[in-house]
Image (tube, rainbow, N blue to C red; front, top):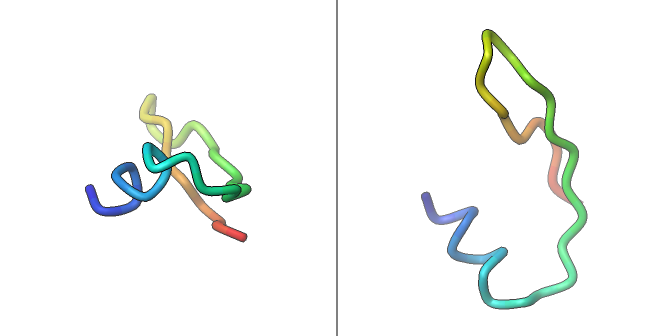
Length: 30
């Protein structure tokens, strides 16, 4: 996913992850 690629770049990105139906899902990106 593009979101994970952005996180790997080391950018200061804050995100909220919630476990939905047993899967960790990013629900908000700041």
